[in-house]
Image (cartoon, rainbow, N blue to C red; front, side):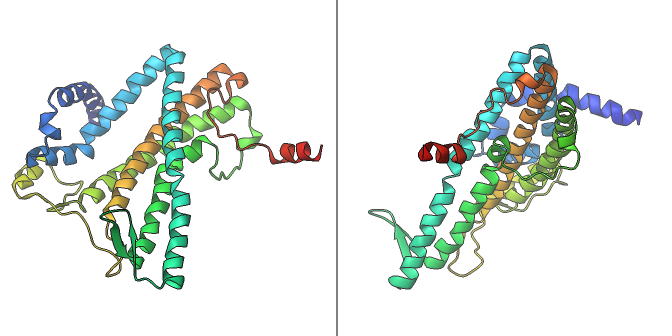
Length: 297
């Protein structure tokens, strides 16, 4: 027990050194012309050291925010603004998905074409089945990149057993506990799985979470890019590695949103009901009932 507590605080203290060293020596992990540098990046992206750097940064920012609530509100606005901006942009993938499906139907059923070309000069030409399977990518982009946007907008389905019946401050406490005990651990586990899952489809030899840094550095001389280009059908979509990248981005965005939700819940708990929804940038879709009444009058 004592050894575990000592290990925990040692890693927190070492996080300051590790972060400073990484910032002052970027060539050791960002110079991918050196394969050893690339495997260091892969290792540290899913390592205990990286976790404690992120965790310690969260603790420091939280401590500053507890001292200066205006700073914490600023963090909430930046993180929620990031989620809204990314989500609003990639939500247009839904429209692209519909338009592309219409084109596919027309090309197959009316023009009886086996392939589709998009572009001018040197168009992008693939089999119809490629474009049909590529629709999955739009769907994955909406799910992964619009998830936190939907959370900010309050669009996720909730199963409410006790939440609506408790007092305002109790709700905020439940939200804080939920962000710390559910959202953050879920995001960390998804990142740990998704990070190495992604790299196993980008390079060879394959890497895993159990690989030690010294072993990866020894493997560096035989590491080469081997990006996954295998489709489910002979002429189908062959860029499924993008789905693995989206999974990692999704985990990172959920973790950031968990921080924003924790901060917002704390500030609304501290400042009271008058701060509920403060600085919340929600989409205004209008009130259909009010518009109907206006039209009748």
